[in-house]
Image 1 (cartoon, rainbow, N blue to C red):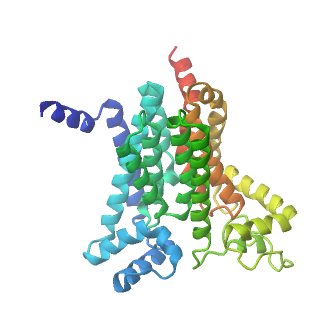
Image 2: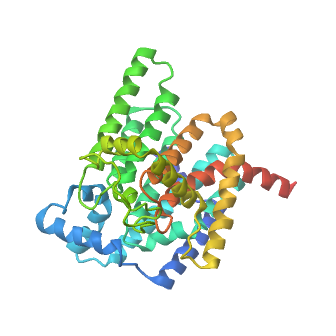
Image 3: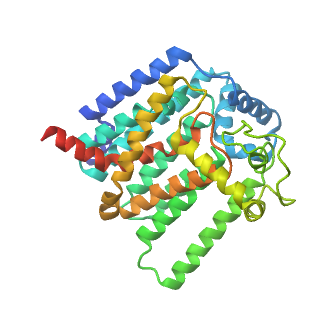
Length: 381
């Protein structure tokens, strides 16, 4: 019993670095709340409407909203029990704080260096757009926190057990019902577990398991694409959207599409029959995705985005050699998550406020930490 108590207390106890992180995190999030309060416009109204509808009928308006259900359920709880929406914001903040601490402890474990982990976690906390969504009744805050918690948990698995596999499965399910792009975390998780823990399995069994996982993912992805509602995957191609909802060119000649365009078949049909437009738009969306600059942002806002995120991207590129040598499986996980998010943007459009990029920003910070570690050593030598 005493040993159990010591284990629990050791998990709850925070060190000096975590105290610093907590104070910085608290300062930034309090500033955001005081500065702008809870943001209830835009998509918040959409999810609130769906929460009311769910409480009245037990259903959401169209099947695609089940893929946003975590936030809808949270709002529904507030409405059902007459709680202020601040209750939802507090839960979002607590989950964000938990994810931040998991990030610090995971990077401490990866690098066996608390200074490197402290620097990396401070970078994450100082990601102002990332923290800003904690005050929105959007899906992003929950999604960012859950995907980060999922990733930290998977990376720290040293021996795969049924219990740990169950936890991963439950986290993946929660992520998939928070945002549709949660499905993109299925392949990184499957591949990491497959290659890290099934190396001794026979080639025949490996092939069968990998084929089953790939087919299962494609089936789920196809179901999500065809979930209806406001989803129209050909609209960004018909209007040549680079930024979602902002037509670049209207009144274009019709593009070749299939009858069932909201499907993997429909997407493949478009690519094969419109390769020039597809490649051009993919290139422009890539520039928007990794470039981050927006013409409608102020000069100061754009300067922050460029200095902060370009530095992280450069550090991540410089750190790749370290990951290949020391943590190849972890590199595979993070790179796959980044690649799939990037492909999703190329095949749809980029977000007005860089929300898709923010999903992968903690992974880019982690990939850049070997570079940060070298700079810290030089600074203190």
